[in-house]
Image (cartoon, rainbow, N blue to C red; front, side):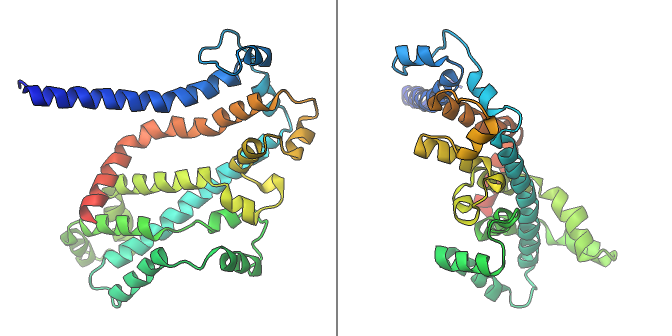
Length: 291
């Protein structure tokens, strides 16, 4: 189909803007990678202006990944929190959304108002901290899993998707004697893979990037997630004492360690996202239309 002059201008402008945005996004991360593999004396000679490394050194990665380094326990904590948190959050979100998607549920409107109310009004940081403390969850291995284990917004998106599934499918299964759990497991969930992948990815990103809750509820560095270690390194321009003690040697310049840590922390998300991108896009579109 031949484009008009106006359409050509529009397409050209779109390509230009998107290319510019891509460059703006890619260059900072490329700079981080370049600095992380550049010897410090070259970094100093060029006053930090390095886009293409002329010499390579992996001393920063070697220091961070040395045996006994704090980065290993921090990574293990993050992986545990992310895996456990995503599973628990998806379980709570799916079960709540499935129940509220049932139009015949008694008190459905009241329950929905209850969930929506939590989106508009929250208890606040201090009451939440007091509650966590009274429950004995401070500085435990699972506090960072429980504190973010539910999102009313994600539940509403999933509920909207469930409502779009033909009710006749559930009714026919119920007539054949299937229980509600079996209907959910064998009929609803297989049809809901896009929205589950979408919500799962949202929870995954939240758990992986969380450092704020760790700052409040965790004081033991051996229970801290890797994001808190990274945040401490960047915000204070110094290394946590536990990282220095674990490494047991004179550290290289902090700026290189910061850049290497950023790469190590961001790499898993960069590897995972391409495989779930199609589900993410499809699920977000479905949630937005049905909502």
